[in-house]
Length: 349
Image (cartoon, rainbow, N blue to C red; front, top):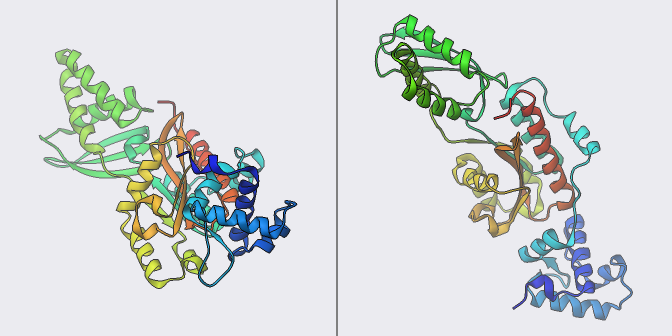
């Protein structure tokens, strides 16, 4: 059987687009008379009713029990997003308008937190962004400071101006001289590079090293492996309470399930990580998310990247009755701006 879109003639496509746009704007089932007035087609109300019946049979619209009008289904929204609307790449005017509202000079964490709040306020929905592992960022400077026999304070200054302090348990005691030699070696040879690159290069050097360097390299490998251990990404969520204003999500149990999903984050992070592995904008409508609490929601995401390397993903979670034509370019633009902001402090990989 051919795809649903191939079974729609131009009039049916036009009416479906008009119906979805009307429903998104007003939130009421759309009747044939309204479509006859708003669609601009020179056809009778009877013809429109027949086309609506065909769209209903295809599963693209549904008629609520209390109304003679129709509303789009999840499949109807999917056809609308995939083939009935177009959104241009973000232009400089949109980028400039959004860029003025992002925080400046507050480091990566502040930038990403500001991006979630911007997305939330602009879309009147929930803004989300994954926070990449620190290992994805290049470091500017590192110091190892002895605390006691086998505990070392590690101070790392990253290229994006974030600073992290960690106390690590070493595999053997290190003298202050050894710690100084290890930090000097890393700062001299590896500043501006990411942790995975540093580890791989150190191990190669250690295999090729002469005895004079071997002890310093071994210490640098040992300390660097523990200084920034691999960990899972986090996700920032902003504007959850804005969903309480949406009549489409007014059910208390549905809201409770949504808030629990935002609080626990694990399943939400899994969904966003799937988006980070894809190119460009991803849109999940209703049950397409695979998460029961998001059954009445749409998720619009875009990855943000530096020098072609994806660091994370950001987006909007809101009701399926969402202004897609405004939200999608806004998410794209915000992802591009975040990438630009991070690029200014992150050297090429």
